[in-house]
Image: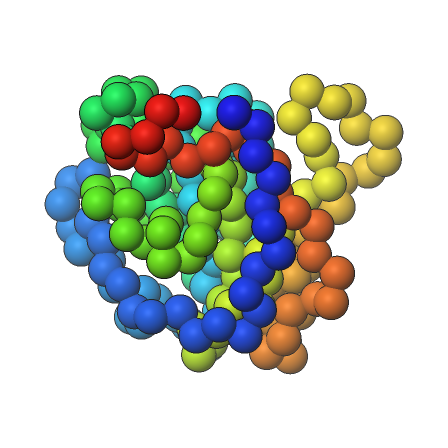
Length: 187
């Protein structure tokens, strides 16, 4: 189901969390905030919206990492009901799209619920203290629509602003994607 993200809780202090990647290696948020901030991207493998932007996300993530801004992907879907989103398939998806960032499993969906994530993709930009400063889209390109204007990398621009000033942009366009597949709920 197509879902648009609501406005973010700008100024919300994100509690520390830890998740594991498909190989079982633990990752903790507070250890990866970096001096210029952190992007938390809620993704999955089967959503056509994510598939359409995965390569652009990988390129933008490389740019951000080169500029000292950390990036992490989180997969929160119920992969028992949606096996394309299984940890094994996450590893394959990340490799196929050359993700330069960890892609983590939110097994109990607690991190997605904590953030209020509603769809994939759903992007959250944190400052160096772990405070939410951005919730929006990757860029101005839309799934299934031929671009009428040049690409504007909203997430990169927002994170540069956050990295430089500690504050996100005043205007933030919502992301659009497939709803998160919650355990025990019909989607």
